Length: 555
Image 1 (cartoon, rainbow, N blue to C red):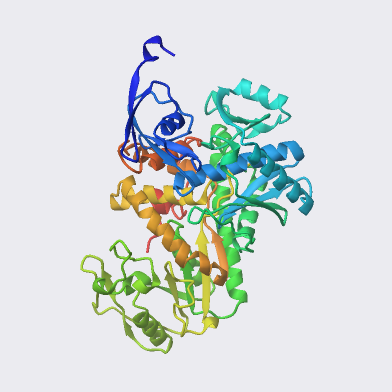
Image 2: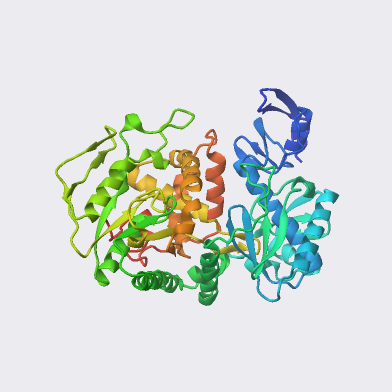
């Protein structure tokens, strides 16, 4: 430490409104202790809105905030720390087991074991060892070392292949963590000790096991039931596809960029989408005559492009598709339900004029002519401008919206006439053995880029809207996935590299004073793992084009 700084005093503000003077270099954790803050549930801290480990030294006047499991950042730290405990236990008990994270569904992390059969006994032993590590409450130490030092440490720790997922082209140093006698890699900040994350379960499942964790919304409970989600097989198939084309992790994607092979990966990924569409068409044909195609998916899934492609392909099998927008059937603004904070709730199904919508669709299938409304989002009212619709024998309706899978929608229409499709990007690209590219982060980056270019929205506005969108998805989309006839994965293995060029400057515009600074910086640091890719090789009908621009398919 520079001699002149040893006795420098810093002014620290805490979230309870109190101030304190501390010495230069005092850790955030010690500063909180001096403020008599209860730290038993502390996982990390925010220093001037930036997420930091609890042991970070304070070097300037600042505001310090405690982060716990109920915070979005805290939940990520909790999950990441439990995965680190899993790594320690696996290294001790089953060092030769080839483990790969598959996906996360409803708070449950699914792992696949490639080289040996995982048993119930192994699950019990793994859980016991992890709980022993929690009881010891050992300090978790962060270390930033050179690639060569990290390689030496892992080799002498019995984990010689640990750096296989690290690209030496991106950064000369490696951040590693140590607890007790074990070193490990992790994608982000960990809790200060192994005792900070006591709640979790391990159970055998299919080709591997699951790690069950408390939810942020209710940290006192763990969902101990393994849901047989139809999404699991989609994630599993996508993982198998990435293994076939040789890009299972981020460094392998970067290697393709460096060696000039990314155009081939783009073409293969787009061809895979075309194959999925062909499979969808075959499924439609095998299920008899359908008159109503209903598409649902969370925000930024690529529903617009998908609906266009669906319409084109439906024509190939003899249908004449007509797109009906559910957005035109919102209730008048004065009748729209509101959230507890007084804002309009546009996500609930009660925001739709269901009676009118059901009557119109039923009338169309009765062969009647219907005057279709157009919702004016400025006045908050439906308008009628003489646009009529009457179905011909081979006409089918294509309907897209958040509630398209909900049984309450069009409940008077015979289910035999309906074909329901759920779409979402379901990523399986690994960052390391225990972390993968987040599906939610992928959608968020898509939305940030599109909102800026098509609506002029700054990052803060998009991030401010995101929690309500996520709440709506959790309440109104995910519970109804089970009603889908087909699940279409809209992820593209190369897309983060394509989005990076557009998202990077937008994320850097968020000021430190913003409440969204931490989240924007987290996303910024995430995309730094990827090399940018040329967008000229991305076809105009790609789902990625819906977000980065120059799309050739438009309704």
